Length: 245
Image (tube, rainbow, N blue to C red; front, side):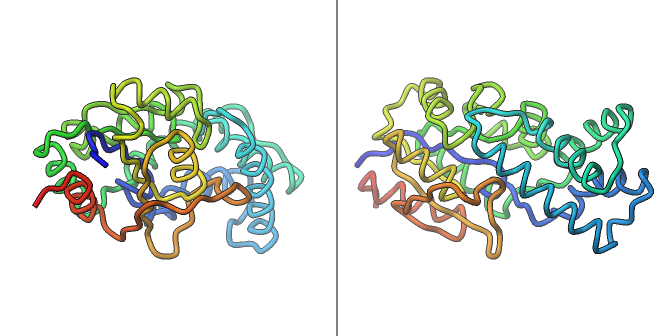
């Protein structure tokens, strides 16, 4: 059961979603521009309904851009409240949303130690994320993660979103490793575990307590081969698989 490569999801796995409120500030700014109070129960109900509708529609797609998802979600919220978002406001929202993600998607405490340990063991290390290029690249570079991995794959680059097969095949081709020697680590049983298992990889489920991966509701979930609470535990799994002391 040799492991020669480890692929990681980004959001919720290498980086934390705990600053969700900060990442949601661009949406709040749009609502206030429209004269809508985010704390108003009617507005909150519209936001919840719009999120459910848009995320359900996008989850059924094999590929999509998150910038489109974010736009459609705020546009649908406005529509439910009887108004529309001007084009210039939406354009400004795009940039502010990207920046909010880059600024507030922060690394897990043991990410550097874990990635360094895997590289020291001679393994290929990659990131496979259901995010746009302008999310993945800047987040990894901001925290020095890009220097500790061999490559990264976004859903935009692969034209495929987990759990669709193409993104896993695309990442495996980059790694030049067989699926049977690859460990996939992610926080979503639906996207990461199910998709990677179908591709023939062994899987590790990691999760922040109380956190649910985005766009995962309603999709089939698969049990992981391993479950951990912290990234550093991956080193022990790799060592056991490779019969290292």
